[in-house]
Amino acid sequence: MKTLRNLAINLKVGQEILVGQNDNKAKITKIEYHQKSGDVMINTTRGPRKALSFRLLEGQFAVPADKYR
Image 1 (cartoon, rainbow, N blue to C red):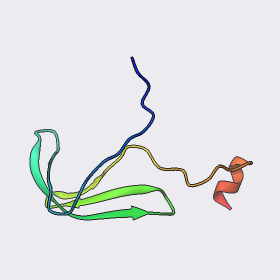
Image 2: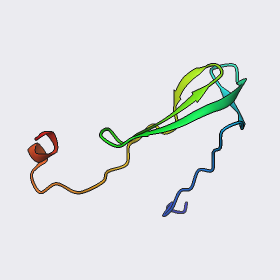
Image 3: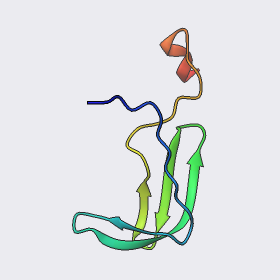
Image 4: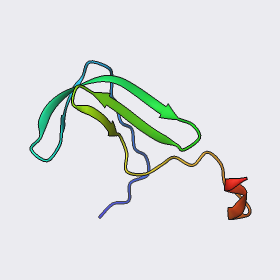
């Protein structure tokens, strides 16, 4: 098994993706990045979706409590 070192996701407005339990087709209408939380949201014709199940960390904190200050 290889370890993944880099991940690139190419999405664009107007692209069709499969969503939901039954793999229904949906068209991407808007892509948003929320800098405060690190979430990437995709608005589709079938409602908003999270693009990733993890968040991007902008910087490391010396003390974990500093994240909330």
